[in-house]
Length: 470
Ligand code: ARG
Image (cartoon, rainbow, N blue to C red; front, side, top):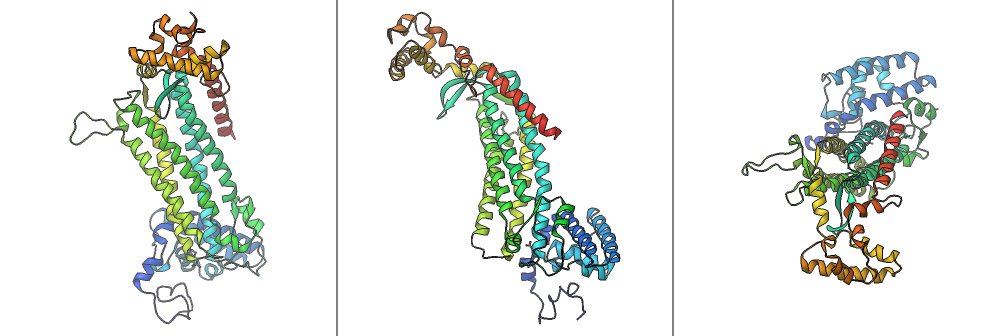
C-alpha cells in the first residue's frame, strides 16, 4: 500500500483498514453526486485557510504558491467540465484535495493541516448559502416591483374584499396587491436577518475540539467576508441553525407565493373572471380545446409543499443528534439546495407572470355590487347619527333582509324601504352605499382609501430604491 492514504481511499481509509468498502456502502455514504455544487466555496475556503497557514508560518510560502496554482487549475477543470469526479473519493472536499495533491504534490497534502472536513463542510455550506441569499434578495425586490407596477393604476379600481371568501367590503385592487408587497417586504427583512447568522466562520474548530496549531481565525474570517466566528468548536461543526432558519424563511416566502398563486387561479376562473393571464403562462388541455389553464400558478402553489417538506426534513435531521459532528449532517444539503432552487425559480416566474396580468375592472366592480359590501357603511352612518354600533348593526341587518327579499342591492332599495329599517336613516343615506364612497372613506393609516394606497406605493418604491442603491 502506498503512503498516501487519500490516493488509496478506493481500497481503504488508512493502514488501519483491512478490507475495502463494499460498493453499496461506497454509494450509500458518498455525497459527491450532489455536494459538488459547493466546489467554488470549497476552493475559496481552502485558499483562505492556506493563506493564513502561510502567514502563521505553519506551511511555507512555496507551499502556498503551489496550492494557489493547483487550485486555479482545478477551478478551470471543473468549470470546463473536464474534472473527473470520483465516487471513491466520497465528497467534494476529498475530490478536490486529491486532485490538488496529484497536481502539486506535498503542498497539497499540507493543506489540511489544522482543519477537518467537519469545519470545512460547515464553512463551505455557509459560504455557498450566503451567495445564494445575495442572489435571492434582488428576486424578492423584483417580485415587489412587479406587484407595485400592476397595482399603481388601480388605486380606484373597486373589487370585493372577502372574509370567509364571502363578499365583505369594497377594497381597491391596488390595496389587495399591496398586501402581498407587505409579505414579500417582510420576507426580504427576514432573509437579511438570516444572513447575519449564516455569515459566521466555523473553520478553526477542526474536528470538534479546536486545534493546537496557532491558527488566526479572525484573518480567515476577514478573507472570506464573514462577520464573526463560531465561538464554540463543538457548536461550530454541528450547528445547522443557519440551514433551518433559511428553510423557515423559504417556507414562509413560498406560503406567500402560494396564497397569491391561489388568488390568481381563482381570479382567472370563469366564475370570478377578474383577470386574464398572458398566453405564455397558460397551458392547454390535450382533450378540451377551449382550455387555457393557469398551470404556472398551480405549480407554484404545489411546489410550496416540497419547500415546507424540506424544512421538516431538516428539523427532523437535527433533533436527535448528540454533539458534535455526525454523518447525518451530510443529509442537510439536498433539502437546502432544492429549497434554494425551487424558491428562486418560483420567485422569478411568478414576478414575470404578475407582470402579464390584465385587470378586468368592470368584472371586479360588478362582483363588488353583489353581496351587500357597503352594509357596514350604512351601520357607520347610523353610528355617526348617534346610534350605538350594536343597534346600528341590527338595523342594517333588517335592511339587508329587505333587499334580499327583493333580490336587489342595498343601494337599489327604494328610499322609503331603506328608511323603514331605522328612523335615523335620512335622504342622504344612499350616498354612503356607493362602492367608491365606501372605499374613499377608509382613510385610516393602512386603509383602502386611494390616498392611503398611493402613499403606501410611494413608500414601498422609496424603500426598494434605497435598498437597491445600498
Ligand atoms: N461529506 C461530509 C458532509 O457533507 C463532509 C464531512 C465529513 N466528515 C466526516 N467526519 N465524515 O457532511
